[in-house]
Image 1 (spheres, helix red, strand yellow):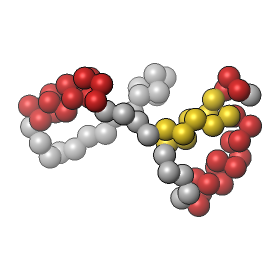
Image 2 (cartoon, one colour):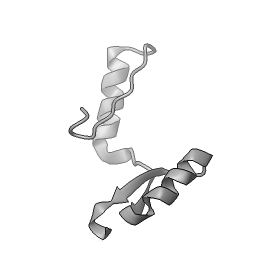
Image 3 (cartoon, rainbow, N blue to C red):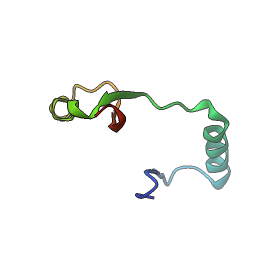
Length: 66
């Protein structure tokens, strides 16, 4: 999962049917990630923001703008 940059979280609450419905919901495209695309040179400032808890979304570094 690390190589494909995929993360999965689990819970002991719910049934296999609940899980199948949740996966189908995500696969339908109705789940959107809240990301903030930032250029690679901004990485140090972003780390400072993350350390302060001042990031409103998941921060994604754009290596193409480096």
